[in-house]
Length: 339
Image 1 (cartoon, rainbow, N blue to C red):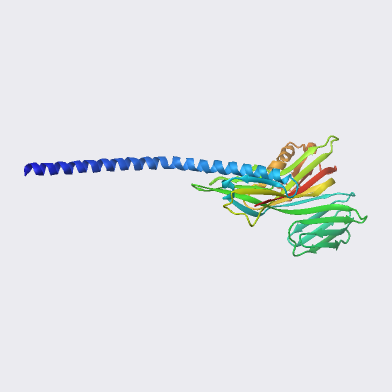
Image 2: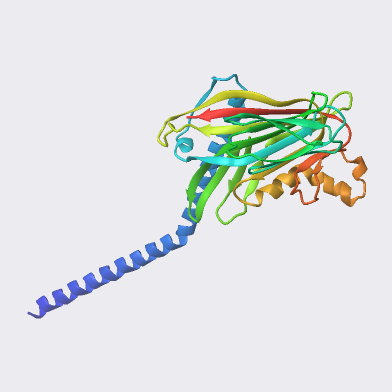
């Protein structure tokens, strides 16, 4: 009887020992997982960032290549990462570009919503030719100026100003550009990359927005010393038939339209950017930052390049310095469809 009781007590002791050992193992393993958790999250986030960044860079490169091809031709890319994370960005950027083309007058066109204002310094502007996606209109100016209310404007807007001699003295274009957003889910939120107008804008969770690649606006000098401004605008369209589960991503060119290709004066470029308000200052600094250095050094007369038009804040847009000499202006609009 005593021997049986002893065996039972030993068995209970062994069970308790094993239970305590298992509890210690579970506790240690749980502690290990707690300690390794942040490192595992970092590894997962790094993987998502890497795959998203590479996919966005590859897609942007192929879009730029397709945009250069003839209308109707393009590329096909196989990438599951792209197809599962694309969303369209409507009216991501709105560009207004205007300049004097003939004569010696200085004309300014202002278009805000339904309000159109035209003024010319020497009052030589005579007729306004306006076209948008739905209509063509002709308006008459009085003493070189006019204030009109025009409702129902849609799509891209083109305005030519005819002077009293019958020549096109000024041109104004407003172009709305769509883009693409790609997203990857990370521990603290989404990692997003916006592909807009040939540029690339990135946003990491809890980090400020960073412009990694800017639209294609440049200035240089021709062999004879004439300044040249070139701007290539790019509109992206995700077809309504596109699926998040597609295997092949088709990138086709819808052709290219020339907006300016001539000698010009008095350039004004204004960009309205949707989304984060920190993008506009980054654009302005990229193109006009050197102007501020010359301004600080009191040597603006020696500056050649982009600078603010009107207010130094850049709210009025930007222009080319020096402002008086004529320059070559090349502006084109490319269109790409993705499906």
